[in-house]
Length: 252
Image 1 (cartoon, helix red, strand yellow):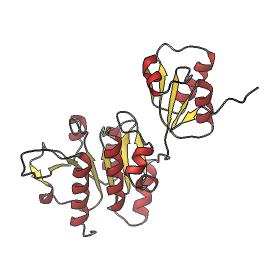
Image 2: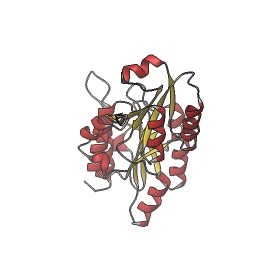
Image 3: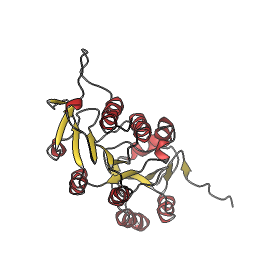
């Protein structure tokens, strides 16, 4: 009898038993796609495991799963993360203990993988201590993201959280000033003092920072633009924003 090949290719694991084994072996999983209306005892075992580990689940039609792999996926595909996510509530105190002011970057629904990789590269180069992302509606950390980041995603902590709003409240209570970078702001980034512990919020490529997060900011700032195209790629905007913080703090 031939041994069944391990059901894993290019950062995904498929098949109910294979996904169960991946979770039990401690692999970090970005999310799991599950066929709608899937049933059975083994699937129920997987479902409980997903909920216990608080893994993001997305129910999708059978056709979407077939578009990812033509092999026997049994209605389940898991995306394996090449990095381990960290806890922002552990990171911030550890930075303070070193006598350093934390600089945290919060990405609200930045979904493009290459943008995310480029942002991570810039953030690591310019001394950001951690990147915070939501557990849904965010770029998957995959091989493309790692490559675009030039390996920075293996160096800078990435923290995936269930509610950005709650995390922002935590950071504010921890003494960080919350700065939102948005074209809706009146004040230019160079006119806003950016000293001390800082958390920068950058919004999605489509519609910027969610209004529920804007109201949590201490200050809103914008990057002044003089050309006819009044928007920047989010990775470029991140670079400008982080550099301005470091410039004001005489770090660069």
